[in-house]
Structure formats: structure tokens, C-alpha cells
Amino acid sequence: MNLSMWSRPVSLLALTLSLTTAQAGIFDDDEARKAILDLRQQFVTMTADQNALKASQQAVNEDNTRIRAGMLELQNQIDRLKTDIALLRGENEQLKRMVAELQLASSDIQKRQTALVQTTEQRLSKFEPVKVQLDGREFVVDPNEKRDYDAAFDVFRSGDYSKAQKAIAEFMQRYPSTLYSPSAMFWLGNAQYSTRNYKEAIASFRAVIAQAANHLRAADALLSIANCQVEMKDTKSAKATLNELLKKYPSSEAAATGAERLVQLK
Image (cartoon, rainbow, N blue to C red; front, top):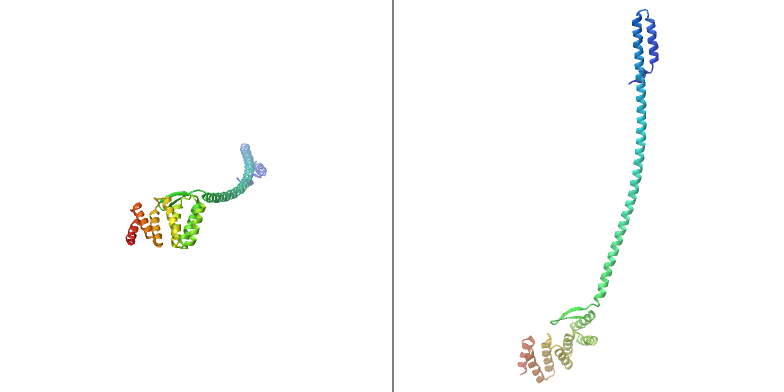
């Protein structure tokens, strides 16, 4: 509603009264009274409308005040939430860094533990007995003992039979009760044979048979003894050794070779 139309009620009333007075001669008393009553009613109505409008405007102003206060409080809450979110983000970043550092530390610890376990196992493996399979036999020896035997045998395989004799002899002295003994003595005898040390070779081959008559190399040791005796021109002893070979190990390959050699010696 336009407030300007209600801003001049008094002026309108005065104008109306003036017109009424001017026309008093025209209208009779009843009509004049009726006109005055109508104007008064209009004035009352206009005044009431004006008061209602003022009350409505005041209510709007109060509502606006409450809305502004509510918006201000809402903005304050938003600002507090932004501050809390910023703090939470900072704490989250800090937690991420801590987690990353913990993961890195955990990975480093695991690597160190793995390295420690491997180092410990390697150190223990140097002392733990190892299983050996050699010349049809299976036995357990100290790791150092296996290492030294392999080293001595490698010298024999290299073809340097003089050094091989020394290496195998030193091994036997270092491990006098070794389970490698029959095999070691057999290869020692072969090294001695290759350097024409026939008597020493015969002694080594005899040691193989004495220590382990059922050893895989025992039949070959007897045949090698006969070969040494042949080289020494001791045919009689060679024949006796070959007969011993045929009697003790008749099914061996060495026995088949020995039988042929025996025919040749006759």
C-alpha cells in the first residue's frame, strides 16, 4: 500500500469541511450530517489503516532485525567451522606424515631384521652339520670339514698330483676320524700312482679296503693295487691281487677288467 496517500488525512478533512460549509446552503441538514458522518468514518478508516500499516512496517523491521541477527550468527558459525576444518586438515597432514614416518621406520626395521636373520643363519650354517652323499654313502660332517675335503679334491681334479698328495694328506691329518677317509685314501692312492709312488699307492689302496670292505671304491682299489704291482714287475703279486678281486667282488666292473688282465698276465 502507498504510504503517501495516507500522509495527508488532516488536510483532506479540512478540505472536506470547507466544501461542506460552502455547500451548506445547498444541502439540507440531514444530508449535511450524513456527509459529515461519512467523512468521519472515512477518516477513522484511513487512520486505522495507517496505524495497521505502521504496525506491519514495525513487524517487518523487527523481522529484518531478527534475520540479520540470525545471518550474523550463521556467519559466525560458518567462520568457526572453517577454523575447525583448517585445524582438522592440519592435524590430518600431521597424522599422514607420522604414518609415513612410521611406515618408513617399520620398513627399515623389517629390512634390518631380515638382514640380521640372514646373517645369523649364515653364521650358524658354518657350525651346523651338513649331509654328504659320496661314493654311495650318506653321512653328516662339519661344514669346515666338507669345505676342506672339496678343496683337496679340487686340487686332484686339476691334475697337479704332487700337490694333490699333499692336500689330501693334510686333510687326513686335520681330520683323522673323518668319514671321508675311504674316498680320500682312494684318491690319494690314485695321485701317488700317477707320480709313480707305487708302494705308497698300494698302502693307500689297502687302507680303503681295510676301512670299508663294502665301499663303492673297494673293488677299484684292489684293481689299482694289481696295476701298481704290474708296474713294479711283481707279476706274482699282481695275479694274487686279481684273484682276490674276482673272489671278493665278482659282480663288479673292476672284476671284469681284472679277469681280462689276469688272462694277459698268464
